[in-house]
Image (cartoon, rainbow, N blue to C red; front, side):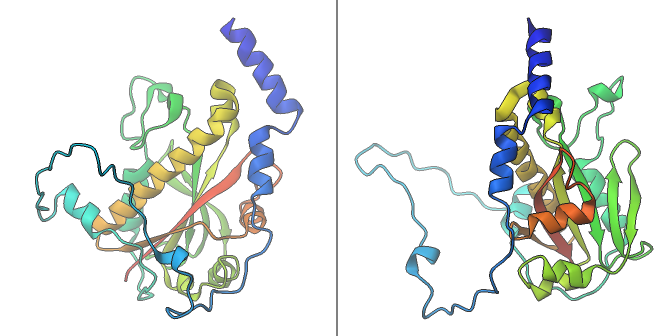
Length: 260
């Protein structure tokens, strides 16, 4: 019964555009608006006011006050923040290696590669995510686009080129992105998860991208680096750069990292 379900699902995925494909494509950015010119005086309050849900009539239990301990994980959580001012100083190859392996490498090989585990939760251990470091300023590594080969813990050079102008152009003209050291492009090969969970697999891939993105941000904080998650980018241009625009793989998330 399970094999029959998997075969029918695979035929559906290969034979027509899935619901999650249609949703992803319909929510793509075809172009980005000019950088926001709003000031503190004319910014709508609905953009900045933060709301909190409470139950005033219900009983409450006051929790203990927590003091963060220096160099502990909780302290890293406290220090993490989105950084948009970078010094244009290169990071080291060792730092880049640490960011990649500790965030998404094979930290537990198991008896076989099929039993291997990575540092973030993945629905059914299907691991649909791929990471493409776009290197802008790193010692010992030439500028360009790379693919992180998880299996071999290595970088595969896809394009040797200075892509700083491309990055600024395709992230809403955010000039600060060109002063970062590396931008991690996270994609999803969705059928790896959908073959087991159907259309709901798309939700799992998005959740997984969030887990991986947070790993990168926290590890960057541990190293004294700045990071900023990017959701505003032109989907088709990023997919085109990665040469995945005609495949069952989509860009999900960008994380910029560099020395503040």
